[in-house]
Image 1 (spheres, one colour):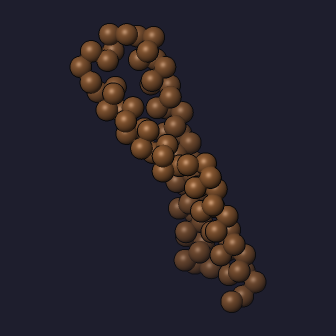
Image 2: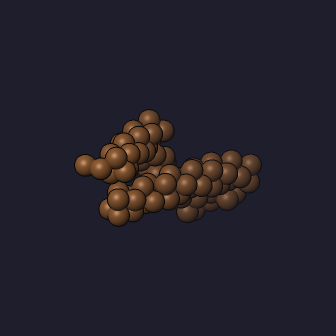
Length: 81
């Protein structure tokens, strides 16, 4: 294994560890739950609660997407490295 391949492999492992530590899979599941809640009849009747739930969903979606992009790039480097 070349030094570059070794570094790429190490990076892949570190991103995977961070993914688990930050609990991205759990956050993805929470987004699904929140989206279902937002689609429920009467959800928007309580505007204050709707705003909080919508903001939580938006924040989690942003974080999950950022980590998905990091993982995707990392996988691309690993395949091409």
